[in-house]
Image (cartoon, rainbow over all chains, first blue to last red; front, side, top):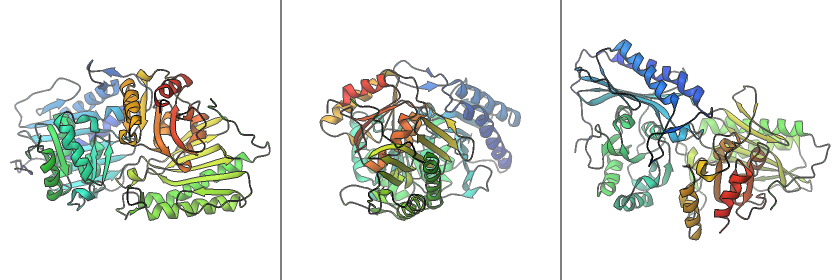
Length: 273
Length: 273
């Protein structure tokens, strides 16, 4: 089991420029997303079978994020939820979800965020989550995760010390995520934890990274749903893997936990799938 | 069916003083609740069988609210979640829930609020919800409901025009609220609506009143969970009753909807219980 895969990030990587670009891009997106939030805008459906809303704000915000990245790192790969990927020969890639939590977004609930992750050779090492309505920014960089409200000073964050399921505050999107046999294992997990909370999307991982909650379990995430969150969770001391206990960089079913012990407890149940 | 029970509120009722007291009391509570939010404070259990956290902040905030009410209306009845009721011979009563949504509160999620309602002869005619982390105030007074962010100018709010279940954004605390036969009727309702959202407590009713969502269905609410929200919903144009279609002032199972048509659609299903 490899719960903290490390990159062989080159020593001369300009982390300051990467951090500055994460901030600039994510906050530029807020100028599009925030005015659209609670504005009663129209919603399209991506698929016929599932409700998966995409707003014009979502698509426009991604273009602004891409522009900011391209101005700073013109040769890097860019992967986004809303537009075609830009594949280059660079080992660096930026992974964008302009509005993660669109179901929150379209029902007036501020539990959504703009996500941007940065990977080297496919392994994410930096990421940002911005929630513009509440004015919150969560950032993960090598060795440190931080929380910032509005333009206040950023504070270092770390996960809670919770080690047992019976004390754990658990987040998931909805119990309905888990189908078939997985519904039974999820029900077993929920019966053992202290408190379940639903529908917080990226915000859940950030609350867990900051020590306010303890466990996140979700299924069928895409790379843009999770790339930005991996560095935020790991550099705050948390563990994040798939249901096999492996690195989640290629997306899938996710367990994120405050401590190795809590992660092992959740993995012992959800890993049956 | 009586969906908009009216009070015979005396003409000389000082609504300005009541509104001023609602604001002063709810915002005084924020000075206690907000510093405690995300502070890692301890949590007690009210009951052995259910997880029902009460924090010191909850209890202290109610005392501050009571003090503010007593300074302005010394002879009025006061009913609170956390302390003994003060019963007087006045036809006016104030109903307090210092922190509605304690499960949100203890997991770092800002979907909780301070609730204060005012009733005349047992019928609520004014109410306030304050969410101090996001800086939101929702107020219902005879003939008008308003939304205010921080100290910005208050805006009149009104419910959405959604009339059909298939278009409705539904809030409930959790599907697990509904047990036995009610679980089946709730599942039927959820299968017919556009989008379910869980765990927003008082915030859900306010989002519905402001037109961002369309329907709220919950069970086993207490009077202090709902008294403040009735005037906010009704004076924004919404309908709020129990599962029998009657006035919810005595608490119970609640349906709140943006339009009479949507309310009737939800009542036709949940009213089977």
